[in-house]
Length: 262
Image (cartoon, rainbow, N blue to C red; front, side, top):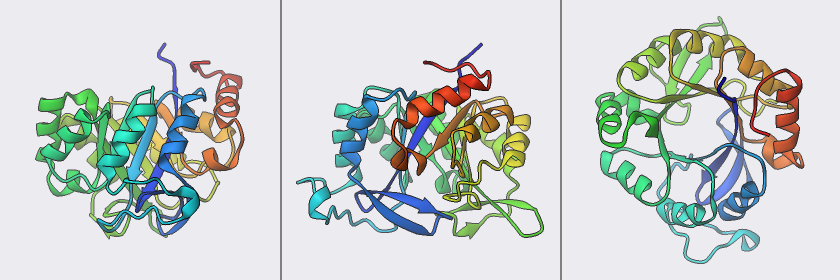
């Protein structure tokens, strides 16, 4: 049996790490390079960096977080890849095949795309053919409306698409994606746990691995995500506010009878 993966997600905004809530509220956490070094010492299986910046300006403006010369995301990737000794996924603001090739050539193992996958689905197939399906992760952000209906949103959770998450997930699989990063907008930063219905819906309709994200507030939530159908469980905020989050997460998964790499 394949072991289930535990994955931290680090959110980059204008060159700094932030925590997120509902895709709208962002609090500065720290420095993207220091965090990569820290996770190397922890027992995590992979690392995902997502650039959620709205502009092209990267400003490491706080003196305690300033790193000289880091003026763009690729430069940050260069520095992160020097100290990251686990599989590294890089995403955010990716629009072209050329960008993807640059990211892989500068140390990332996988690419994750979101908005451009919806706007130009053929790019999924092109990227899979050139880089391999194993290197292509499609990120799907889902908003649950007040009537319970779920819809895929793009552009940082700001634009509805009319797409049903399970149907879009099936399409990206058919187009060659190797993995899905599934995020609940409503649960983001709440600590209430994953949207288990969403995970079950998408994982039941696809054969490729689904990485669950959005809502983790305690370690027991990880096991719930796996039992709902996820192949891997990811979180962002909990890694910044709990000490030894890797050990606590792995212990909770093992206690629930889930095979993990200890």
